[in-house]
Amino acid sequence: MGALLSCCKPSSSEYTVPEIVSVVRTQETRRKQMAEAAEKRLKEQESRGIKDPEKVKRQQQRAEEMERRAEEASKQGGQGGLKWQVET
Image (cartoon, rainbow, N blue to C red; front, top):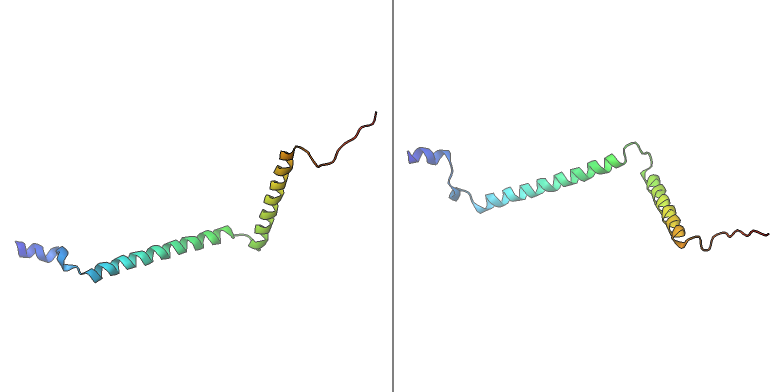
């Protein structure tokens, strides 16, 4: 009975260290490839439908800069802006 089971299930001593290391390396390379593919898909998805992605980035930066300036101006409470004078 023992001879029958030994042919179906290899014992742990039958695996060598180089075989285990090669399995680990292939898993690492597969993970790396999958991560690279995911990054590539995200990049393609961001630029889908946009002819000039650099132009869009510049426009976004300008909008953020204008928004930041508007916030700074509102924090100053109108100091340094135009002043109205009313003569009576």
